[in-house]
Length: 213
Image (cartoon, rainbow, N blue to C red; front, side, top):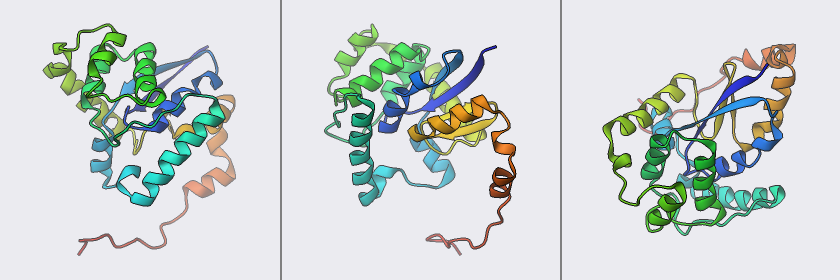
């Protein structure tokens, strides 16, 4: 019996590209639905910053991405500018139904080749089989769908991308594949005494955030 999982992602994240390249490690009967979300919307909701917004973490993220791609044997070329505005690409994927082939084409375009979703937009559209002046990205229903996807992810507890939602459990990041495979093999993985103890840990101290009263 096959199982299903929802993969929340934003093409702005190099880890989305790296995570996608590891799908082949997951069971072949796992049905994956790719769901584009706006990472910035997640950050705004949870009051956090993205890796690229912290100078030291930004450098680490990019270096780690290059290294991880090498470990996976996947091509990787950093775009000239990052962060970039992913809205148009996300909306186009939604308009196309976000099939895995289109998602892979887009991620390869950005992270495998380092191409720019703005200046190289006609090339991306050609690879996806649509005209560069396609009206799809401006349709109200498409814009609303991206917002709804983001809200859905937030309601599920998703705080970052990429994240899998599988049977009510979240698996965040390209390095969560091993844990996800263990959960697929053993649905009681998170019911062990050690896991329950970790889940039940009390909050000791709370950091005072800037601007807090």
